[in-house]
Image (cartoon, rainbow, N blue to C red):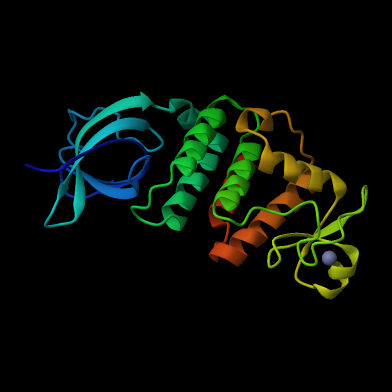
Length: 253
Ligand SMILES: [Zn+2]
């Protein structure tokens, strides 16, 4: 008998495998990120319906093909189609950046329920929100926190003593993991300068739930500074250039 695995999962990516089958990458709650073959999924009257569309959350039943080391989708039942993401370019683009990031920067078959919840909640919020960019920035900050690279925004991340001066610009260093006090700022060249409004917004996006991110009004300066900080951290810790984020900005324009 084949060993069966039952789990919820969200499709990150799909590609053609053969004339009739698709190969999917799914971020699952129980098994982490996996690749799975969906036989017959490319046929017009596929038994899977739309349960295998990108961003759709479904209940899956898989079995593992021991020879190929690949999961095969046996059943899929839709939980949340997130179809609202398909009708707004900026929402679709934000969801694509998240999916691309999870695809690239999670370890295959490493279970991470918290990350799964973040992703699911952020997709749900993206559908409802009027501020998709805030949801995306919040997702990136939460991803960094879960990975152990959460931004230290209160005490100086280098000396641990000084903090930021209220109402003044400050520097954030990816190498040290957060804000720098004045003394350390003078020694540390490789850091990003941000204004007090951006600092406040950063801590809001990092700490508050997705539902509240829509309340945050970001002007262009603060949003640019925040993106620069996040971009800096992603590049330092993941060697990740926010290419897809730039694509998203092109779409929003
Ligand atoms: Zn310091």
